[in-house]
Amino acid sequence: RHHQAKNERSLPLSPQALTESLVTMGRKSMMMDQTRLRMEKMEAERTERRLRMKQARSDRANEEAANVARGNPGDVDFIGLVREWREEHAGLAMPHNNGSSSANGGFGEDKICVCVRKRPLNDKERRKKEHDAVTCLHPTATVHSAKLRVDGISKYLDHNSFRFDHAFDEESTTEDVYQCTAKPLVKYVCGGKGVKATVFCYGQTGSGKTHTMSGIQQMVADDIFNTLSDNVYDGGNGCSLDNTTCSIAIFEIYGGRIQDLLNNRNRLKVLEDGKGEVVVSGLEEFSANDPTEFLALVEKGHNNRTTHATEANDVSSRSHAICQILFR
Image 1: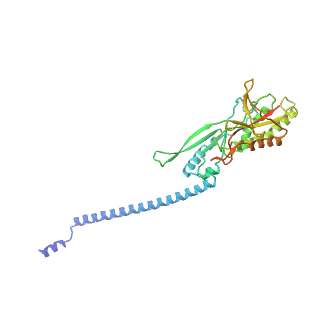
Image 2: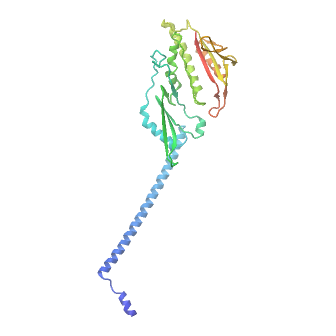
């Protein structure tokens, strides 16, 4: 029996069985080939993905270094989103019109002109890795608020725009601000009609109020005396060096106290006269005959202001200072 069984196992396969066996082997071979191809594809994709991630990390590091060099450190993703928004809206900025030909202080029929000036990041903000989140495209200023979606990972920006009469970006100079704000008022108040004009600056601590107003005061000094000199030859009814004296008074409001900054910081009182107008009693005026004397008085008043170190500014003005320029 054993010999017979052995002979039976040694019998050749029939053509049909041989065909089925070859088909089965072919299928197994194809499956192995497909598996190997899939594995090779997965490995190639994994390698490509690793290269992309490595390149992305390198690009991110380079972009962060470039942002730091530009003085704008902080979150690279948010900075990139702000940059994309600015590129999309760059064409919306309009040129400034100072309206110097208008009779009403350069502002046409409007009696109030509201402007905003953006300052660049300061050193303390850079050390804290904060980023530039405000865009000024005259006449609008847009605040870009950094947000995270509900997944806690995806980043986006919430944009809030505000419209002003003038919006000055960080590239604008103090002279640009002056040309559109205070300069038109000089000729207006020197017209001899007894009018008044006010320029005031407000903002949070460290926003650059003193920096801007100091520059404006220097330019006002030159323009006032140039205008008074020109009016001598115009032959009109305006104020001129022949019929007008210029005087200055500077005081500050600090902690409920009012102090004369040009007169030994003497305490002053705010009263109301018979006409119902507010008067600072005891405030002393000092005459200025030229821009040099004008600026000397302004600098004296500025140096006498109350200052303290704050988180935003090492030498921060802690009072409200008022500089009055009077023509008589």
